[in-house]
Amino acid sequence: MKILVPIKLTYDVSQLKFDTSTNTPLLDACPKVIGDADKCALEEAIRLKEKYSAEVAAVTIGDTQEHYRIIKDAYAMGATAGYVIKISNSEELSVNIVAELLASLYQKTGPYDLIILGSGSSDTHSSFLGALLSAKLGLPIITGVDKLTVEDDKVQGVSTMEDGTYTFNGEPPLIITVTSEANEPRIPTLRDILRSKRMPINEFSSEDLGVEISKIEITDVKRYVVERKRIKFEADDEEKMKEAVEKLIESLKKEGVI
Amino acid sequence: MKILCYGEDISWFKQFLTAVDKIHGEAAAVTTKPDIAEEVSKYYEKVYVADVGIFNPEVYGKFVAKVADEVNPDVFIAPCTNKGRVVTGMYSGLKGTACVSDVMDLGVEGDTLVVTRLVYGGTAKATIKVKPPVSICISPGAFKEGERTVSGQVVNVDFKVESKVKVEFKPKEVTGNEPDKADVVVVAGRGVRNKEDLNMIMELANVLHGAWSVTRPLAADYGWTDTWIGISGLVITPKLYIGVGVSGQPHHIIGARGSKVIVAINKDPEAPIFEEADYGIVGDLYKVLPLLIKRLKGEA
Image (cartoon, rainbow over all chains, first blue to last red; front, side):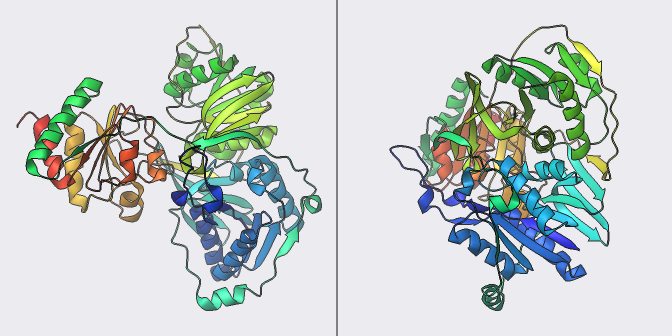
């Protein structure tokens, strides 16, 4: 069994700060990580490696040290191959180009039995990538999987959506997108981390993959501020608490929402 | 511009009308729900419909792509829901269009679409210029429901495609608690210490004839309930949101930002939710909530 796991280097948005005067994001100061769902995708693939001695290839797109670092992280978790598609300012690539690059890598280094990926990245969270790959490669797809079971060539994914629970049954070749609820990704041991440092990273350029690069035209990025009244009632003793509750009810009646 | 709108409920089709107006478009509709097609045709000149079975990304994607062969849209519009995103991704891949999710606003400059979308986990908005053909997923609550009266035509599409993926569906239990439809939603956060304490949250919701929900840790980590409010859960747009013991992490707040009025009850005066709230009570929820419930019931 051969499994491809695309991973994305994303901003840890819980630590993202904004310039207070211009409202622009301070991206340079924001730590970057493998997204939660991507990590769960890796974990699922590595569990299959342990069960079926599958090959697990991790791939990311970008050319910074951190991109190489997350491929080493994937090796430390248990990946058996690592690829970096070297493209500068890769965060400006459209998801369509990302899909083309990955589809081409799939052809060049594959084919694979499974592509497992996170259902959405923590920064843009469009959830488009898996579906785009499915359309481009002509492979069936199951999406938003919270619970994945693979028994030989039977793949079952359970997915919770707005209106209920979907159980998808398929077989390889298949694309699977998993959510951050799918599992608890392992934490590599020191030995795994040391071992990962010696593992090779194979590089591809966009020319190698025959994909013409275009970037998204972004004209403006600003903090999303919703104007709120920000009225606070203190309620640290009983008297104040009564007062606060009265004032709150009065205000909500005035707003016409209760 | 020619537009094709995909949806599975009437409220979304009404929200699309507002989006369509913003780009001065002419829109057709496509749905997989035969029971709403007639209703949708009160708003759209043409409604393409086929019952293509239980949701399967491949089947739904191919169905809308087939309808697009007829309509030839410059812009494809879908809801930013789990299914809407996947259908849009499939559609874009099949038709080779650009695609943008989490869209909050739309405009046109010449032959270019100017799209405002949420980025960085919903903490920021980015403005993007993109040339059609393009597919977009609209954020819940980003556009008000529009009005329009036409007497459109329902077009039954003959569509059949085999998928290697088989799907079973178990509908969500009908509990009457529907945070994504209610006018008032009370949300419990990590300040709520025990599962039993959710009774208080439910009681407040009850008194206000609203629904209740939780933040992600209470559902995903503690397993107290199945769904939560946030970017990976439900996105709600009630008239009134009351966060109880909710700190206000970005991934949660994005799911509640469309609320008209936000109330926060939290004992930490520095909790980020107070920045996002219209009214806040800084105090112990275990004392504030019983008092608030009692007062709303008219008992005190």
